[in-house]
Structure formats: C-alpha cells, structure tokens
Image 1 (cartoon, rainbow, N blue to C red):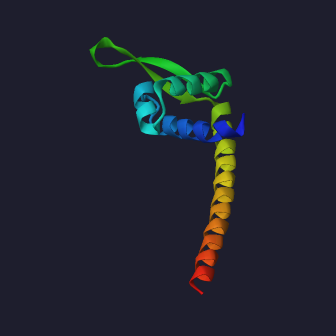
Image 2 (cartoon, rainbow, N blue to C red; image 1 turned 90 degrees about the vertical axis):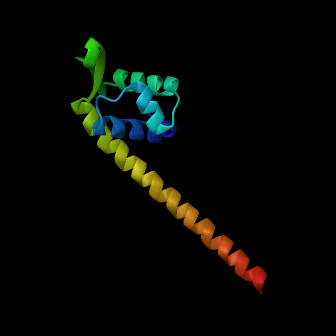
Length: 111
C-alpha cells in the first residue's frame, strides 16, 4: 500500500468498523470524500481482501449492504493503525520543532 493512501485506508476501515451498514454516500459525507473516491477506496479494499460486502434487506424491501472486515482486514487494519500513528507522531514532532523555531525567531525579534 502506498503511504499516501494510509490515512484514507485507516479512516475508511475505522468508519466501517464503527458502522458496517453505512451507505457509500453517508461514508463519503462523514469522511469528507467524494462519492467516487469512496467507491474507489472500497473497491481497492475488496480487491486486497480486506473487506467483503453482504446484502441485507432494508425497510421497504430495498437492498442495502453491510461491509465486513475480513480476518485479513482486521489484521491489516491493526498494521495500518500502527503505521498511521507512527506517521502522526512524526508529523507532530516536526510541527513541534517548527513551532519552537518560530517562537525562538519571535523572541529574537523582540530583543
């Protein structure tokens, strides 16, 4: 998996874990993604064997879908979560260094 998809994969897997019968439209709205992007990401997760989709009957005899993390998907989600956390900690560290440098610059300008 490419690192630029890490956050998207993490966010979509987490959302599906919390609400497996969410519609793609609602998932897109919740994540702030386009419907096309959600469809693309789900297709990639299906192809990688991380998520499977089952039909169920909604009210008024409409068919809905439930998204299920496969055993492989559960393991991969744990790895994605670890990598995502590591990247966020690195980002935080870099931002903290920038903040400290800016504070030092402001302090030097005050003198």
